[in-house]
Length: 329
Image (tube, rainbow, N blue to C red; front, top):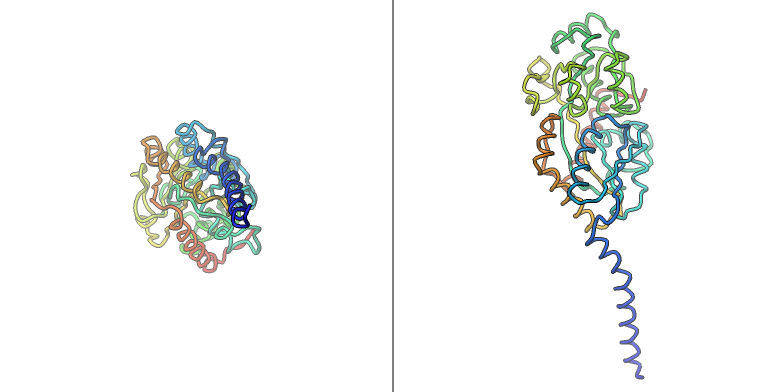
């Protein structure tokens, strides 16, 4: 056997071994998902992230015939779940559904065990909803923003507001409201919007600056009263709910958005398949109707475009934190 023949033989062996090693990954990609997919939601059930995650992944389970399992990991304003998700196996079967809170956290927490821009790969933006000022109708008699402001100014410090935790959009929306209206309301942080909403409905707290998605059903059911949305225009599905601008606070604009990421290192091919399944579900009539009922819009923003958006939000919220003087309670 000549030296050249031996070289050729070695090349064939190496090529064959590489093909054998790559075959399982190729088959896994072609048949994705071949087993349950886990999505970490970093808040307890009942909050805004849950309100969009559950119908989305239920529809994806229906479309694919495979389970998309939500794993609620609440705590520390959504940062605990984000930390856990960042360390999950990057195999295309672990994803993370976070929110605007994760663009705020870098400015609120002195040290995080993850970086939302470098430890994750962006998949896509799921929805965007305006913040809504909601009150317990039995505790707070104000029905308009002007009435609410008049009461707060006549009774400084009497009202309190619940939030999903320190550094969340609920918290910052409240602090921004106080800054712009020159009022004072006591902040009561919870471990998620779900528990905060439960206490608001029960009368343990007076009001919230909530994402409309999680308050929608409670407003429609009369358990909460919507005072105003923090947006330029009225929300889809809520034509009777005025904007803050209509009520004399034109600069008060806060939106809550929700998106999906994968742990860094997840194969691009699998990210693409996740994106394709998300688009299929979100463009279907069931979710379009559900999103309208939650007062939400679905911007068409995927992959790197979503990543750039998150980066711009991190910078924007850093400025809000600085100007509002918001601090961890």
